[in-house]
Image 1 (cartoon, rainbow, N blue to C red):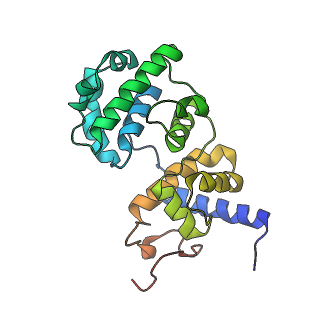
Image 2 (image 1 turned 90 degrees about the horizontal axis):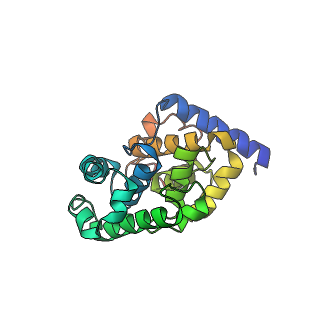
Length: 218
């Protein structure tokens, strides 16, 4: 039976409440201090783990303490600190390019608007959503692989396009809880609803799950 819009919202909120109870300390796992450091960490995290990023950022931020230091650097200078991360040359170029644009066009301050953030090298829609939600209090739910996968398995969305997933989740959940949903869905995806072998027996919302694309025989 097809659920009404109100029933879908009620179900989504029930799922979120259960996940929050399971992961009350869900948070951004990229170590950072302030918007600029989070921007750098997010750029570095593309196709890399948060753990690998957190290993390199202390020395990186020690060598380049401010956005102005990054803007004055050459990409090759940054490369030396992030060689253990995939695509490090392109990421170094993007970080330096973003720093120069922030210094040149935004007075050295990371912009709080998603459109302005997405105009920076290396910053896409997901990264911009992470920054505005975590640093500027703008309601947003960034859709990474974990958020998308868990949302589809639970039947909260059928979409694979991150922008469409974001739009659907935004319509289902209270705006003031979008950041909480982002962190909680990521914790669920990393710790229980893993890509290859989801641990359904340990899932706090197994009774709500549609198990879309999950081999229940495993």
